[in-house]
Length: 247
Image (cartoon, rainbow, N blue to C red; front, side):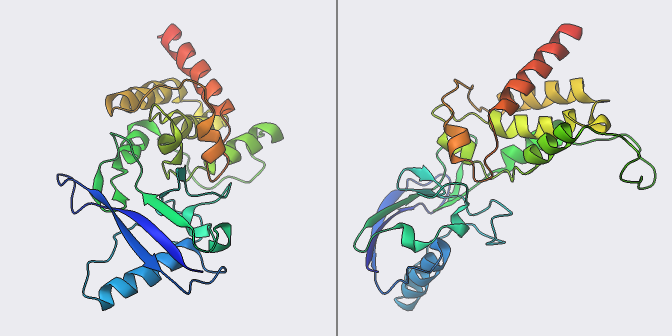
């Protein structure tokens, strides 16, 4: 495949960025998107030019670091995957591909395509955990949990914190991320002890960090690589209202 790449280049968070255009050829349709980026960087290094900085780690769709805005969509044109799971067969020979970092105030650009997602970590640190003493590891059936609740909690826990929901939302809302982290504990007995404090502090931290509000466009659910459902947002809102009313 022969491709034209329009890539956002930005030397640092305080430097004005711009799109740079590159041509690349001989890309296999079986290559992953990040392998294509590796080929580009090898060519740039060979020419003595600065390689494109982009984030990645596991390349298995687990860590969420490979977050890129590709042709106007978080993680690219395929559904239910991260950027590292995207293959070049999803593009056409001769196509122009536009590659950008997430665009959200709480996600400042570090360099080129790398953003600072520590705002999501701060939300987790504010309450996304269980602090009660649990003792030794209990038997699997020691605490009865309804199958539906267990499955919903596991579905919510699948969130990898990549920030695609924020990037997809016109308001840069983190409601899908926060609601998934709230739900994974709120649905289980172990998480109910701190449930009220958890939802209050996590929502407060989300607002403090400058994330926008949810206006129910469902774009977050559509673009989530782990297909987290917006029903988690409804659940979080119920828990938050209950916590506010009960004091």
